[in-house]
Length: 139
Image (tube, rainbow, N blue to C red; front, side):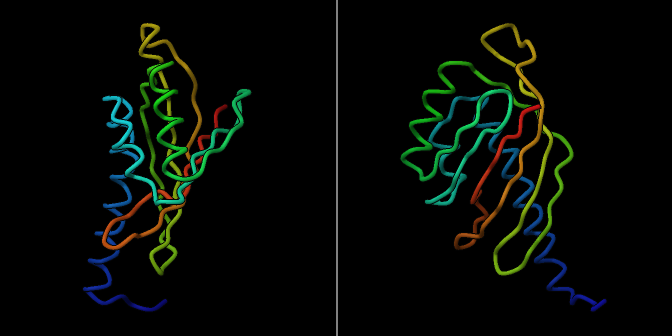
């Protein structure tokens, strides 16, 4: 196993922290109803998919993401809580990750809406990490 230089270690730590913030910022934007903020977390051709619990669908591209999140946030007021974020750096501005989620419905006294996890692909765009794809797997 090759030893990393100090600079490589610091870069890796900075990348991990930036990636770790993406799901946190995502949940914060969802709670606040900040649709533009959510969509800005995705790459231009980013994809969001939902799988399971009879909700299978996928949307790609910021214009489609903007439309979908605007409609969905107005309809159900989801309140996500994420846990246990696992990140694997792949190199060349790419990474994958997974975090577990519990979603409550803010419009129905915070009753449990669902649980599951997000499978994420991350891409570095300039100096910023973005979601290339985010799949919500509901169980």
